Length: 188
Image 1: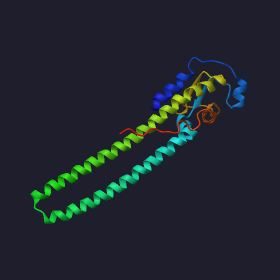
Image 2: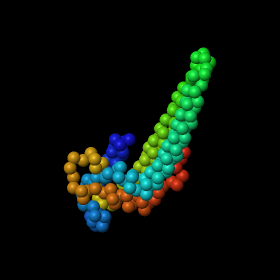
Image 3: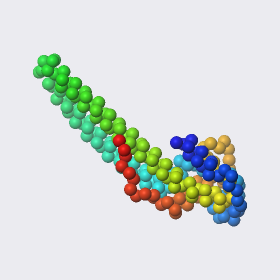
Image 4: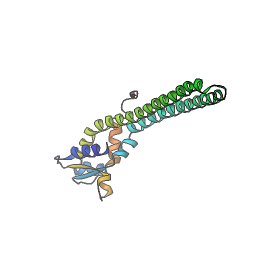
């Protein structure tokens, strides 16, 4: 995903040339054809990204609470089963033990699927953010006369003044805000 973002951001700038030194000065961005951006900070510090983080955290907390409840129920069932073991014949006990094992495995798989769905939802939201951010970043790049925007983490060395992350966050907050208020339900 990070590599795709890097290619996306790089592609935004290729072939686009222009000059806007006055705007670049207003945004505290140097008049240079190459700019950098920290895409992770862009997402996490934007209003959109902070909304997503709050929603994912809330759903993660709900899942953790559910997991603790299930764990307590399974521990209680295991204790009951352990007590029954001493009073039952092995051939009568085996189906109960097998049923318990099946219940544990099924529950574990279901909860793992919910966790994966939550991670998938985060990736969907990141993708939606990047799709919405693309035109805004391209516009910002053109306004300051840059021809390319590179992922900051892939640049060996650069001046901090070429980093447009803060300006991009401000622009995205103005144009996107928190984004869609209705985060989709995670798909199992």
